[in-house]
Length: 334
Image 1 (cartoon, rainbow, N blue to C red):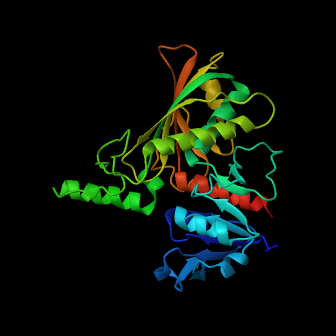
Image 2: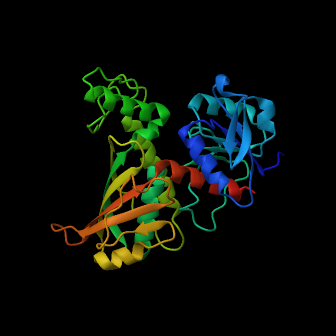
Image 3: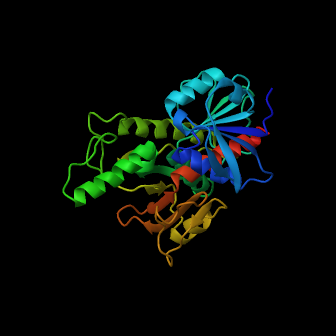
């Protein structure tokens, strides 16, 4: 079996790839990292990793065999190719291309119970970052204040569609302000200065598919629980495409069996991975959370029309949250 101290990143030039590399660079002890480009034109070039020069390699079986843990952070096409080539390596998939693989296992170490152990031959599918963020909050709250039901509005950033999504939002904004035709290859709709409940019919990816994926992954994470006691009930979800580049924003409505009140809820939410902003502080923003671990919670208020319920605002860096859970899963394999 390959040495699992050697990690291979397939799609290292992608947004997720760069984020994963930043997280790995902070690990102690340092990892032996091999960078794989999907684009043949980007192979054989020098880049920087952890303060040192690194050579970007091409995607082939010989390189993959040298890695004990392979991270998939590029396209679904390259991920499928790796699944057929990387014999004996542990696969950690952030693209969700392996979701239908017979050994696929949804992973999110940030919310898994301490006793959780993955099968030795599992293909580790990192849960959708929105599902991880929601599970972190609901599990933390439910352990102390039993939840009756909850409703969550999820505002998705363009970076969930990769570099192409970010570039299209940027180009749409420039085109709109200069009175030019806007590119609509990714969203098939105007996203700039707009919000979308659904993409256009010609979009290569449906927003409803992302919503269903979040729902599936969240149901799995909540079913595992986070220790003693019953799991938090599954919330009702609605996904909206927001005109922002990075970072999830989520509006939570939570109804309790017995409402603990704002102060007790803020105190109960405090956790090493949850930054709680009290009523004396400004609520968190998706721009402000960039590059930070975990999630931030603020604007906790009572629902004036439902005495057992409250509202709260949650933000998370989608790329950082996915990358850190992937690295945590890889570290467990050591």
